[in-house]
Image 1 (cartoon, rainbow, N blue to C red):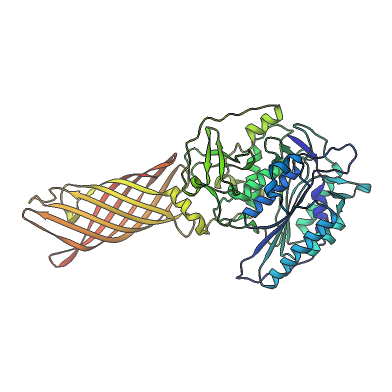
Image 2 (image 1 turned 90 degrees about the vertical axis):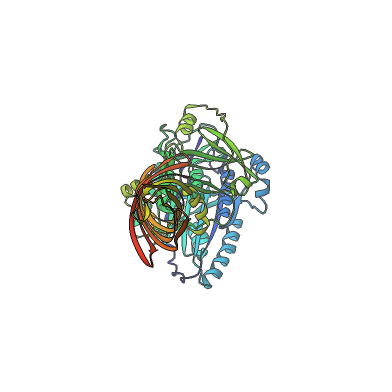
Length: 573
């Protein structure tokens, strides 16, 4: 783990305070997202060695954003290790020089202008990973390969020329070399940063947001085990789906904020502890940083009774994403394109092929091999992503922070429904109830149900088929057979033990077998109301319910309605 002096965000935000006001985009047309990622290991400060992983972070940022459907331009200078490891992802990458920056902005701004003219909203992400410094008279700047990008340069060279509706700044500016090393923060930069942020919130540019992190000493961190900055890695994991707490496919500022806070809260070492700083655009505090990911590999994990801390690496050992699934909640992560992955959890690790992901068939994990070294690395290994992130943590966090929360009433996107549906799955139950048509004895049978998320909040919908047999239902030894198929709708609670209630209506077949003859009604009607508890345990759930059926069948030429209470115990997958 290593540190890099922090100076960038003050430059970014100070340079944006006077930015242009952009026109509102036309509605009804899908928007687009573009990004410029600038990552540079070098430093122009005497005595400060180059960074180790800024270039790796740049590649990971570009790959992550492209996986999320963002049009990305990457400027970086890969070192020998990165060039060897990431060769196929470095095609067309240029060094982050002043001229290359100008050319990239010009190209992206032309695309932005064309999209806005066509009525499409444009969100632009500017990601910087590298050294942030202060020069003469406390002037803050970003380090480029052949120069500096100060407040005026950022305004004239980047923001003013982007022609975007919203600009989102994601900044990780404190990387330095070494496994554990510190060069201290810059108090002047931090004081200016905080003043600039206050101005931004009160009277600054309403269409610019910023996200970055700092420690108590004004530093952020990188970790050699990740080959990346801790903040950058956590932020990318958030955007890939780890932070999507309401499962709408979008990640807003408040979700990223809460996710990163959850990821780093378990880190106890003062040298490794970070604080995330999040400032959404004042004009649209709930503006999404990224939208639903396009088709591609997804890791879909159903709700688990115990939750799990999860890491995904590729077969070369590159860490792609981390998350900590909350008990009782599913998790869907968009993964960068690979043929195979390593899925690592505290209880084991497994090699997962692309075909396994598509079939949602994950191999059984085997015991992992973990090496730990150093006090600060021990703190990160034990504390990073140690706390589960889910709806409960998120709602508590945004309430304490006083920021707008995401909308939990919106339905998840259609591309995510199969994974969520599998988390609810099929329910096979045993039923006991009163005999139909007010007969004597007990009706015993089976029920098969399937439920999926409904269109609003905790609602559920599905279908239920049941069969029951009541022997000796009347004194003449008649036997009753009952078959029903119903459409279901209801609501369910959250967590490992949750209440539910549902109603249904549908078709009924009732057959009466009497000595020497058979009769019945194949066009009966039935309705049902039930309530109970659902207990989630691992990949399965137990459901217990009490219900009341209202059956209507034709008897002697007229429809007869009877009530039949009952109970059901089911196993859900």
